[in-house]
Length: 123
Length: 365
Image 1 (cartoon, each protein chain N blue to C red):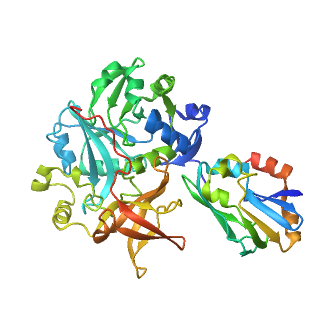
Image 2 (image 1 turned 135 degrees about the vertical axis):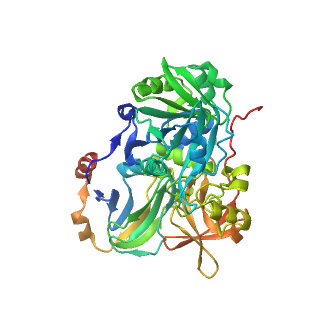
Image 3 (image 1 turned 180 degrees about the vertical axis):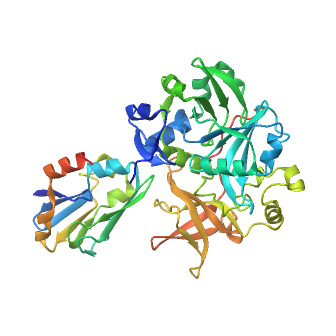
């Protein structure tokens, strides 16, 4: 298992050819109280950079972009029912969706956990 | 970007309290401390302290200050009693709203509080009208809001219990002279407190020493006023909207309707008689996703029939609410609406405002 992060504050946990995607602790803290989340439908094909999900706090709406390309194989219904899960456990229970990766080489340009934590702590 | 933001007298105090500072109305201001949802609900149940020192505090002088203000404002100021406040609107010559404000008769002058983002334009307008005023730049303004605000403030200045909604007076607070009115922008009982900037920190410390009071940021100020159905200048009101369109006709008092004599009176009085083409309304949205400022209201053919000017998630009601301008024919509460935001359609319904009932402490109550 490998964990990656993007500069858009998404995390990608890779197991085999499946990637679980969510937003980071830093992102949930910046957004504040999350009141709505919408993950992509299973079966949707996402290209890297596509708008994949929506997350809204009391204050503002944000898009979650596909950090890598793939087909959506699972979508987390729990965050639609209880959006606050993204605040309380953003890098665990508050995951958004799972992708079957089409091109694992896209992972190469992403940050590892240590680099991301150091980078985001300075924002 | 050049750093031209002003700093509030309580800037360091906000930071020490964990306030997340953002640019607003030309100032660095706290958008939240512990979180908008918790702060919002705290104010509805206890009491919250807001720093609104960015707002413009003015004194309008002169023996005929009331008559001078009445040329720009549609409210009854001549008959306003000493120590009483009136909500009013500063109008341009076409009857458009330049700002909304609170005016208080205070002895031989009027004390006027205007919005922070518009204060310099307001002052330029008064100056061009030849209305003499003084800008109270060294006064801070704090708002203490919530059902337990009276308890918290009376612990420091017991006489404030004698005030009723829309009444103000001079009190001694933490050893300094304070002008305190029973008014606010949350729909709750509460007070607005004007003190010298040099005393702001002492007063803020004394108020938040009470376990009933927490500091509250701009985020919750916005969600509270939205639930209370109160318009926000620059969003729900601007120079293209009139008091009639904005559903603020209560601010055009009887004598003024009969006599006119205020900027834009011809248009505004005609609009009062005929009804406006578009009107400000509240609405609720099905589901959980907020529909925010800039979203369109469309009819069955996709034509625009209205526009959202404020929208968000109501912490008290746990559902999306908003305000906007809509064709008068669709403005009745209960009317179903179709809203469009970023290409997605939402179903809404016109709702009576306030969304959350006001709990002001009125005379005789």
